[in-house]
Length: 254
Figure (cartoon, rainbow, N blue to C red):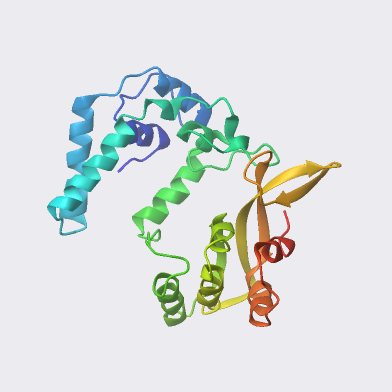
């Protein structure tokens, strides 16, 4: 619905567009400008109806009363999230308590902003994917019997392979829940993949003598993104060489 970042943030938070913002404005400039504006209840009502109309009339989704209530609840939560424009005192590095502004203005290890609101080009890429229905949300359990296996079958049916699988730090918790980790990797083993397929995971790390050392502790460090070839990990799993979370981390690299 929004052709650019400025209008997107306006619609997302139901705030009128501040003066001075352009296509070249940084994400930080966007949030600084919108932070000075007030949430507009009339705009919220109009936007909510526009969302419903688009889903019902353009996409022809059939809504229940529960669906309508859920959409309004989520959108109203965003409307009331005044702290979304404030930068947390801990910054993004600490992750806990990170605000929407923190996430959208965060930079990578080289200082380059990567979020979809960082530049108009980034925004257009995500918007075009949405317009082509290429971003498909799936609700499921990594260790469950259906979600991942259905995705695997869909990929096989379309002669596609997995290029990347972002697990965040979910695997850490799967290893703390009985045999959920085994069920998860068994599900992943059904994916069509080649040598290029890569796990992307977040792990807590601490600095030790100038080097990054992954740790399972949830405090005293920061998150680092780690890469791991999917096929190599699944081969090790099939051979019985994956027994705990440390085995996963040892096969990963920054």
